[in-house]
Image (cartoon, rainbow, N blue to C red; front, side):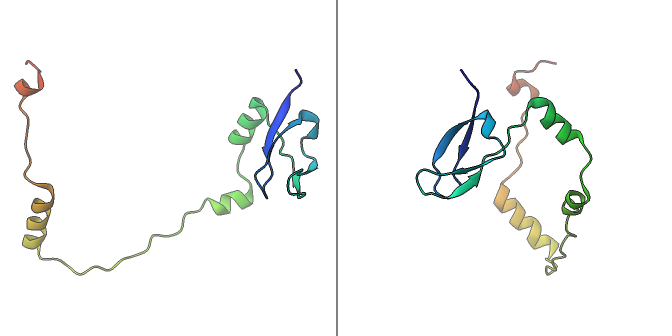
Length: 104
């Protein structure tokens, strides 16, 4: 059996199985008539080499994270904050070693 490439039309979503020879070429959808590029299928070695290679200048610029935003919040009364936290989570319960089935 010959190898095929699975791809979909980006316009209407029609699914196709095309021969490997169609990689990188343009195809016309039978359902909607739009032209689309048939993707190239990388073998395992090529995908690993791409992953290991250094990023291009454009990719390196995209990888720089945006600086964090500073959010100003009013200072809360520490007593109120601890009461609120205690109400939300409830009391802390510790399990002893015997109830866990551990012997020591």
